Amino acid sequence: EGFRLPTLRTLRLFLGHELNREFFYARKGVAMLFDILRAHTSDAAMVAGVAYAVAAAATRHEGNKAAAMLEVENGAPLVSSIEEHGHSRGAVQGVCEILEALTTGDDPREMASGAFRNAQTLAKFGAATSLLKVLETISGVGTDESATRL
Image 1 (spheres, rainbow, N blue to C red):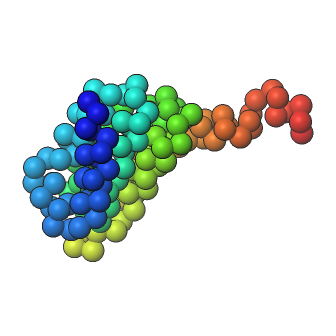
Image 2: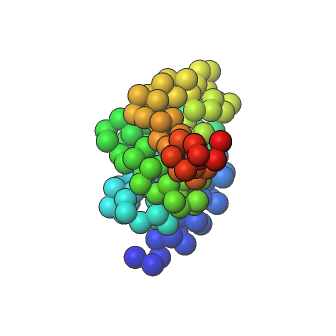
């Protein structure tokens, strides 16, 4: 168990290089990461580690973006982990990095990006709503307490 987080941190660094992202894609690395996420949904540190690695894989690689979106569409607990771990800066930041990577058309090798379609799909799965709930929780906006302060 204890080796997974350092491995995920190191993997994130290696995925900064295009050839490593290609190799990762060919080996179905994104699916492996989501398998880890499914097995450790209650562990905020593990969610963060997986999230950062998936974001690194999806940055500037349409194939890895598509693989991640397939996982989300098949029920991967990405969006639900935003609210579940809203108290964990690392988990929320990691999931936000995935969402940013999936909704940014940044792969220079591709003529067209799936970023807009990904944003629509993530919205259907409640990503924006979940992010707003986290913001409300950490800022106090929308609570009875904040209403009395205004």
